[in-house]
Structures are given as C-alpha cells and as structure tokens.
Length: 228
Length: 68
Image (cartoon, rainbow over all chains, first blue to last red):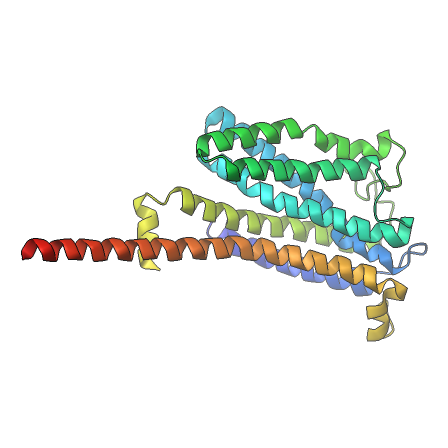
C-alpha cells in the first residue's frame, strides 16, 4: 500500500490536469448550452464516484459483518465522509448547471431526489460511526445502514429511465457508443479516471489514519511515533 | 484552443459565474479531502508524542524518588 499511494497520486494529478485543460479550454462549446456544459467535467465524475464509493462502502460493510474483518470496517468508515463530499459536489455542481440550463437550481425530480437521499445515507453512516462510542457496535450499525441503502443505487442509475425527468440520460454506457461528440467525451473520460485515482488516494490516506488511531495501543504505532 | 483570449476564457460566453463557481466548489472539496486525513494524522502523532513525554517524565520522577 505504501508504494501504491504515490503512484495513484501522480496518475490522478496528471489525469486531472489534462482533463481540466482539455475540458475547460480545448473542447468545443455545446451548441445549445454554450460553455455552461463544461460543468459536466466535474459533475459527472463526482456523481459516478459518489455511487462507486457507496458500493465500496456497502461491500466493506458486508465483509466486516460476515467475516469480522477490521480493515473492512475501517475502509467502510473512511468511505462515508469522502462519499458525502462527492455527493455534495455532484448536487452542488448540478444545481449550478441547472440554473442556466433548466432555469432552476433545484427540482424534486427522481434523479435529483435519489442523489439527495444518497447524501443523507452517507451522513447517516458517518454519524453512526462517529457517535457510537463502542467501535464494534458503531461498525455494525454503519455496515447495516450501508447495506440497506444499497437499494438507492439502482434507483439513481435508472431514475432517468423509469420516471419522466429533466435530467439527461447517461453519457457513458458499456454497450453503446457515447451520444456525445468525441472532443467532448474524451476529456470527460480522462476526468472520470482521474477522479477514481484521486478517490483511491484519499481513501488510503483516511484509512491509514484510521488504522493508526485504532491501533494506538500496539507496539508498532508507538515505534512509529518515536521514530518520527 | 477553443477561446480566443484569456478574457473570453474567463467569461465563458456569459456563463463564467456558473462554470467558475462549480469549479471552485470542486477545488474546495478536493483540498478538504486531502487535508483532513493529513491534519488528523498530524494531530494524532502530536497527542501521542505528548503522552509519551508525560509518561517518561513520570517514570523519571518515580525512579529519582525511589533513589532518595
């Protein structure tokens, strides 16, 4: 893990800088939305990562419940605040994009509401982890809420197909070619990969700190503190 | 390059406020996610070091008292 972190950090930095310059300055403007569409380069990666992070948190919750793996519990706990900020970013950038495009910051539409619920689920898991004193119980409660909340993920994904919505369909799909022009979706793909690497970095940072705090009574943490 | 000048780039065809607001929020969230675990680790290390020093002082005092 020690060598992975700088590797991911470098790739994330390169990808994000490339994606930013490409998306902000080189990609052509949308013929209907003008330049406001450039918000897509953070909105979509944030939304994708907010959901991927949730799935990871739920899998970690399952592993910690079934196999009582301590690391899984710590990963799950670390996912909650990161995911909350990503969901918040997706919602905020969506609102900012909605104003010039739809004429409103917010509508109680299926996609937007499901995304807001995702944010609340993250806040719920985070609160459970941080307010229950007993680590074991906190972990269990957080894991259970993470698992229950998984139903929200397919709802977010298919909300634009199941209900009438203002929100547009997805840009990327496994089975079809993107509906967007390549000059527009290529920087988006770069940003999505960059966000994934960035997520790996901050998850590792947070989990490491969590491990230190939990293992503070062990000899290796003492040695580490004395060595620094 | 899509834009003709820096001013054009900043104006974003009249959507500058929306675009730059969105990107600034992204920046804040990125910085927060990097800084918060690092600061927490630093805090942890500082507290731990203080505790070790306190324990050391206590141990020294006890040994000097028993020597008297």
